[in-house]
Amino acid sequence: MDDTQAGEPTSEDALGVSESLALIDAERRHVQRRVHADPTLLFALWGVAWLVGFGAAYLAYGRDRVIPGWLGVAIPAVLIAVALIVSIGYSIAVGRGVSGPSRTVTAMYGWSWTLGFGCLAVMNSALIRRGLTSDEAAMLWSASALLLVGVLYLAGGMVWQDRAQYGMGTWTLLCAAGAVFAGVPGNFLVQALAGGGGFLILAGYHRFARPASQRHLA
Image (cartoon, rainbow, N blue to C red; front, side, top):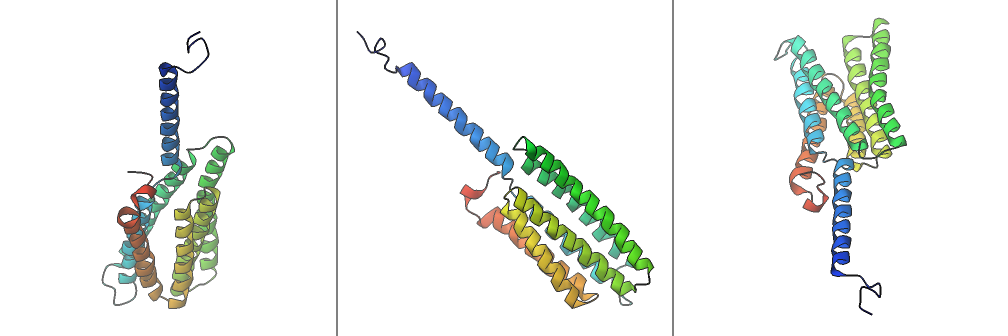
């Protein structure tokens, strides 16, 4: 009785097993790349938004303004809106690698940004109408918006076990708290240099200094 009749694996069987293992490994790497996105773009985008946006707000504040006052409002508003849209897309992309209840979680998390900022705008507008000064209004908008962003990033990092998002949320909360103590217009400078600079440093680390084995996306 030969080896085939004895039930022993042949070379064709071994080749089939190898191919199956290779396919499984390729699929694992594909899912890993989708679930663990590279945060370099996200850090860089928020870094530019904070540095340029709040820098413009600082330069446009007060009687000794360097640029027109309307630019101090328009530039950060546009940059932060773009950063928010990209952030929501990033969170959806991270959650897309899994199925089942996670799809619902992703949708709910995306709507949390819209609902949170919608309610924040209504609340802040109502408080300002009660007689806040321009300095108090500036502090309210910047601090409350950054607080909300920080909390949402903490939630996203917790849900998807994403340290990049969680670290981003932590840094945002620290900058928001520190900016309040700086007053106006010092708060804009703190947010531009500490917030924007911190995010750009993190982007540089993830792009150049982080071990290649930890870079999930090329």
